[in-house]
Image (cartoon, rainbow, N blue to C red):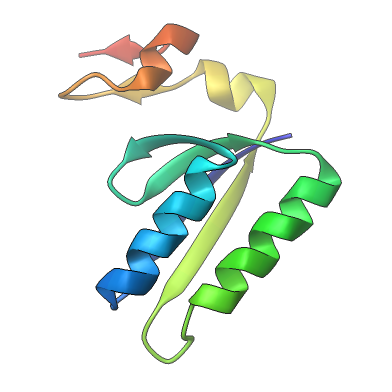
Length: 91
């Protein structure tokens, strides 16, 4: 299953660790937004890793499950990302 995952982490060290964690599962499409393709066990590992990094009084992370139609209906504005190779449109 494909997910879009984002985070807002106040501490630079934990923010960098979250970025490295997510890069192990997918690609960065914006500064703190990633597209990841995961099976159920990988999803649980990623969620546990992010949960360990996030301080809920100051940070957050979110994930959206993307179906095939969602992924095909992406529009990028501005600087092209690696997602262009997957059929996105740049305006």
